[in-house]
Length: 463
Ligand code: UD1
Ligand code: CA
Image 1 (cartoon, helix red, strand yellow):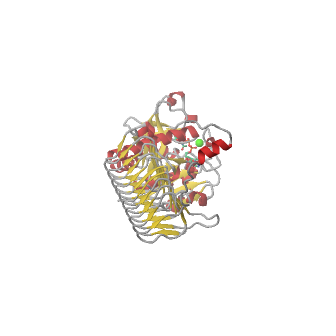
Image 2: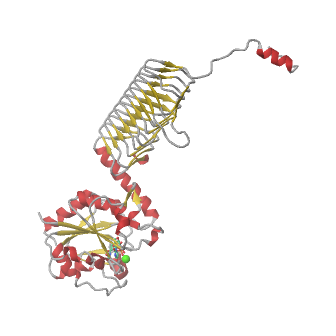
Image 3: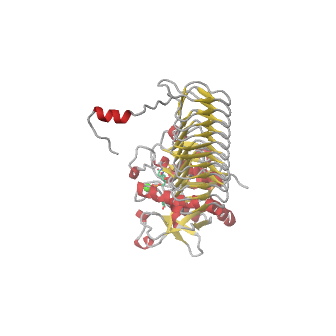
């Protein structure tokens, strides 16, 4: 197999985006466009793509985690000139080179592989991803010769009336014979309507040399979308969301309404899991098998084991272990872990809190900086008082403990195994194993108090 190189063009202005940030850093499904292109190109077998950018590789590096080379093109003199920026790295090397744009994030791995396959089958010098579109205005048109191969590409601004009626367009995604590409680029000039060095001009140079150029039409018009403005950005978001959801469904995940199910590109989901509407799974979230997630739920950078139910809740940077149940209306903040078969119920907030196996925090609680053992029961309205106004402190609750309703656990404090805390207590001292803590004022009943009060104020008591 020949060496595979890839060049990603990303030095264009992107002025129509009207943004402070580089266009290719705009997110689609939560990830920068450039990172999608790099990721997909790599999955298609291209190890370390070269991105041609305007300046500031440091800013871009933060967004692209995969290995990538950056070369800068200081002046934007056209797409051929941009590819030339990779000449010192690639010229003269045998192999194939993909040239793709940084603003077409929706081209699939399958499409990249299909282009490569076609390129090799035909032993072509260039294979162009084309598309038949309803409105070809603005695009370069594909001029085919009698035998169906490509003769040249003519840019819209340079095309005749007749050429403009052609609706097969150049998507600006190509596979080239690497050595021949850099030889041909030397012959490209800028004598055209835009005064630019057109990459598309290499096609005619190949054709004159008698080399084969193949057109590979895209299977659907959607995936070739180029993102130039915010309207196209939203459209790309919709297309990619469909692509991501489609692949999860093909892998055995059910979605009640895919149109309102938002899954990040790096999320993994096990079989037989069901996603209800308005569910957002993003970051590095991993969901196991046989889970039920949603409706109205967000999981970010969270690991969810098999058989978990999360209903109408938000879970951030946390772990939910097998067969646990979360929600409705729970808020689990970073650094928390919900143990196997544990239950976190309505209007419960956890923060940096470990909840042991089978433990229940069913209603109306704030539990922060706390470790709770196994099979404990945290009553309604319990609060871990973790902040003294200066520092945060931890609360530790043992196994099989029972914390009565509406108690405050003033940290740092520990409640031992099998210990009980009476309802309404404000616990400031450790509770030993198997003890009962009652930390509230003893009740006093003042007999006959109400009638005395009424007569004092000269009022009749309603009987
Ligand atoms: C290009 C193609 C056209 C095709 C269209 C598809 C040429 C001459 N034409 O036209 O046939 O139909 O894409 O969208 O190639 N770029 C640089 N440096 C430059 C110029 C461009 O890096 O000096 C990058 C841009 O960031 C962009 C890509 O190259 O990612 C394409 O450039 P753009 O100006 O959008 O090309 P078009 O004129 O639309
Ligand atoms: Ca242009």
